[in-house]
Image 1 (cartoon, rainbow, N blue to C red):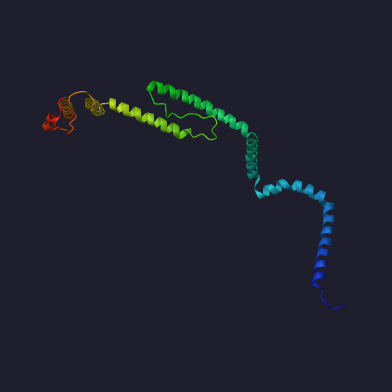
Image 2: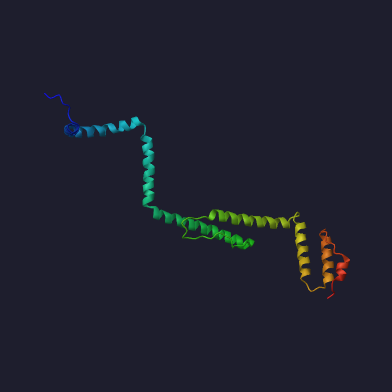
Length: 203
């Protein structure tokens, strides 16, 4: 008997051969018992899942998976349904806003418009900004009509009167005299020197 060790190449050959032979044998045995294994697995599965404590998690997952798949299959149809809902509700809102605009004399230039072909709608901020602006204008108008606003209203009227005088055909000295009187009514310090008035041409 030789005392030589198995060479590296021989060792690799026998290693592969042994692995193949054992794998073939194991596969043959497993095939004989595969039916029994499958049946037992089917029987053990509920207990196995229960032991893992994931029953409820699986139920929740399957529910959302079904919803997702259903939504994905019907996406286009549902998208159009939602688009029609957006259109319908916006039309109702738009009619009401236009009625209010006509009654209360709002400027409708910046009133949000609906575009059917939009992929995403961004009317919320536009609508909010528009309504806030109308609210501000109405609040301002109401203030001018109140006791507190009378002074400001009077100033507006007198300013308009003074501006009209400046653009009138009156003699220059008379215009400045009238504006000086208007300034006194508003308690605005705008006294025009007599010399300035006298120096102006009289026609």
